[in-house]
Image (cartoon, rainbow over all chains, first blue to last red; front, top):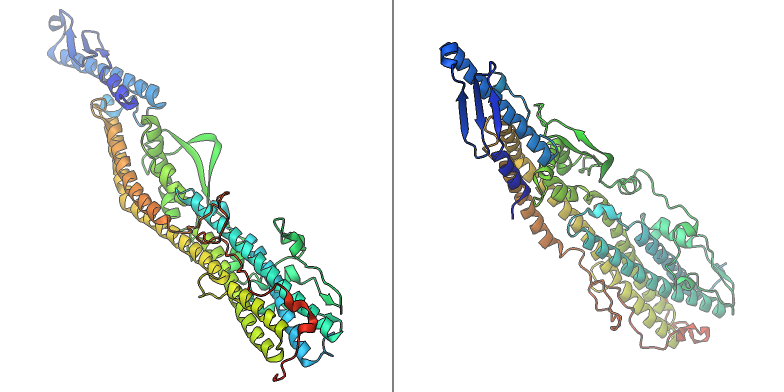
Length: 95
Length: 448
């Protein structure tokens, strides 16, 4: 028998998330299988410096993580009635 | 008006008065068994065996009250009968002043309440109706109906405790849930039920006992863990609500105090039996005839029935057995509470650590990849397993305490063979009441 906790874990495992970088050059995604994709718009290497590209990737990843985190907290609220200790925006995201 | 009587008749009067006082004392003991020995149901707690103990205790009290009634009526029958013989024999009115001081400090006020208001008056050729026998069909009078207050000095800690006793309880507030933070961090597992733990059981020094202190000290942690169990799903026992709270509710001090006071009933019977034995021997010195021999037979049966503290199968012994069982039950509950407190203190850090680890895991980036919920449940389960193991052992041992056969089957007459059932009064070999004829009484020529 699948318990409620098992179902919750299954839902959380399959949570999709997408993050777009601050200037829109990079999109980081996680699909329901957990595969991570990083898409960089054509022309980024011509328009941006190396440091700018790195910053774009970083902000896209943070955005993806934040979106995923929000979905995670939402899933907990749905299953448990409250986030039970999980906060939506955490220190690691702000760093 | 007994000072003008001859010495031998005076012996009859003394004997009759003493048995008459015994009858009032036994009515007092019946009231005592009904009121003082009545342990408030809540004091047994809500442990798996609490219900059995409560039913056993109350059933045994009923059996013991039945015996008190039996002795009461035998004593009244003998006392009243002998006083009437004395009035007839001496052709003199006999009026008595009763004195209940010999029954002991605890019991005396109850004897006084039951028998004090009356001053029985015997006239030659008259009859005095029974004071109690007409109530046999019903449940018997209550103390209130006797219209007398029973009071003991407040300096006696046992009676003082009785009059101010409280039973631990748990109050669930209807407005539901409150926010509580765990420990020093602001970490919260959400809302916990708004529960108050009142009237904590106290130790001998008047402080909350070990279990009370453990629960109050770790209440927030325990309640958080339980709200986590509620959230994560069913199928897991809760350490507080499923185990500890059942022990919290019991009050060994209340049970022990009432059992301690019940010991006085056994002692009163012991005194009644010994006084009667001495009185009966003395009576033989003064009277010797078929009537007095028949009376001796009655007196011997009654005296054996009352018995003494160490005479197995007697009423005094059975009553003391019950009081001892109450004391045993109280000690058993004290030990269980202490064991729970010990186990709690020993393992609570595992729970606090598990909660801390859960807090960290849930906040981590990879929370969704690990299973912090299952890890926390496993830690709670481990704690619960320790408590359940102790509860199981207690449950096995509890079966031997206050164990009485309560059931009388309808198709089987009660032969008085039930374990700790009411002891039946033995049948007698001589014709009932043949001693009531005053013409059969002849003084012993060799009297002192």
